[in-house]
Amino acid sequence: LNIPINTSALGVWNYTIYYNDSIGNFGMPDTVLIEVIDVEPPLIIHFANLTYLNCTTLEYHHTGLKITVHVVDNLLSHVFLCENSSGVFINRSIVNYIEDNYSIVLNIEDLNYDKNLAYYFYSNDSYNNWGLNDNSSNYYILKIYDFINPSACEINYSIYESEFVLKETLFTISGGTDFDGSGISHYEYNLDSGEWVVADTFLLTEISNGPHTISYRSVDIAGNNGIIQNFSVYLLASDMDYDNDYLTNYAEIYILGTSAINPDTDGDGLFDGAEVITHGTVPTKPDTDADGLSDGAEVITYGTVPTKPDTDADGLSDGAEVITHGTVPTNPDTDGDGVSDGKEIALGADPLDPNNPLIRRILLILEIVLGIILCGIIIVIHSKRKKIPSTSQDLINKEKFDFLIFSSIINALPSLNQIFVEKEKLKFPIKLRGLPFKELFTFFNTLIGCVPESEVRSQLNILMRRLKVIEKKESWTQVLIKLKALVELAESRGDRELFDKLMQLVILIKLMTKHSYYSKQ
Image 1 (cartoon, helix red, strand yellow):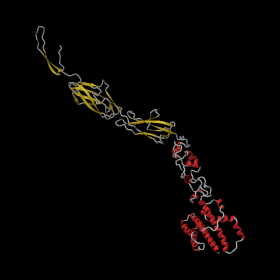
Image 2 (cartoon, one colour):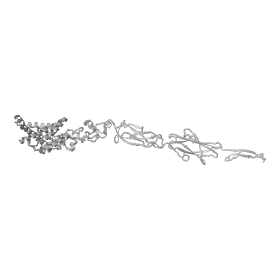
Image 3 (cartoon, one colour):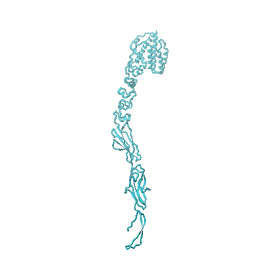
Image 4 (cartoon, one colour):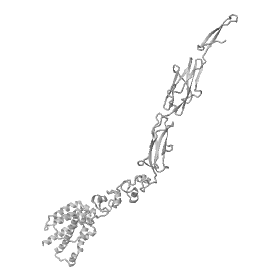
């Protein structure tokens, strides 16, 4: 007996069965209770696409994943998600639904980039029929990705000059960020587009001299490469001489402080090596002796000593001779007049004119003084009313007497003695007699100008100015009294040089006084 049953109507149903025989006789009816139950499990539908996920690719910076599943069952009871975001599978009940779509937001912020999220679904109905969707036992697998590239990093090294570095230079890569990424893992560099080398510090000691290109980048934990940067360097070996100035690169950089790529660091016209090895000058200082001439100019152009400011020791620096006075810095007496260039400048004379008026004037005055001294000696002898012995007379008439007198006054006046070289002391014969006092006054002022003692100079000037107006018959007593006081002052100080000068002046005045007396007679 086949009885059709409407399975859409679940529950307990009463069925009455009537039956009869072949001749039409009906028997007693039977009542049968039939229960219609649900034996179909829930239908679970899910795909790893945007229809069922809020993203199809999980990235490291994502914090939440919304998962939706479609479940069909008239008597649906529960829907579950089983997932391993915590490292082990956990069942999570899904209670949020719209019609037949059930959704849950899964926290995935602790998922590492190198992990996979695995999940599946199961559900049951009120008849405890269980449905399962585990993607045919493969689970639904979502890989966590990090698509964030690190930012640019930086490289630090001691740059020598421009693009030049020494082989011993240490390069250090650091910095860079990987915001919302997996984080910086390491740094890499390559040389001249070669293989990438993992290192955060490196040396290039084994690399050949010359120009090279260095590239570098950061890499995050997920393997994402950062921005590649590059720069060019010129490697210098310490034991090489790049600029060919006869100094090694190491000596120039670490010892002397000169440029290893510029043969003449201070630009003075001499190679650094020549300055250090040959001339003893400072290769970073263009004018070692600070005389106003560059080291190169002294060596190459003028032949002076670059470490000695006054090569010819004439009292003028080499630079002053060349730049200011036009004299020869290797010749102490440029014009050959017997007076050094420095003395001529100090006296206001022209060091380039051997016949300049000032020098001739001084020489003339010296001749005059000698004449006065000679006359004075003659007068002193006559004032004693004694005849000059013939031997003395003969001595006066001899030329050597002129020289002895001249030498005596020169020696008595060291300031004048320094002006004249020895050969010039023989060139002053006694030519003039009876010189006007105006000329004598000029000489004394010149003489005073050579005396360095300021406290004596004022007194001598007063004394010399009196010579301009004093008459031959006037008494010199007061003048000699002042001179005597000055002599005593010099003697008390032990100043032999000043004492000699003052005594010489006393002798001159006394001789002139004698001369006046003799003329009067």
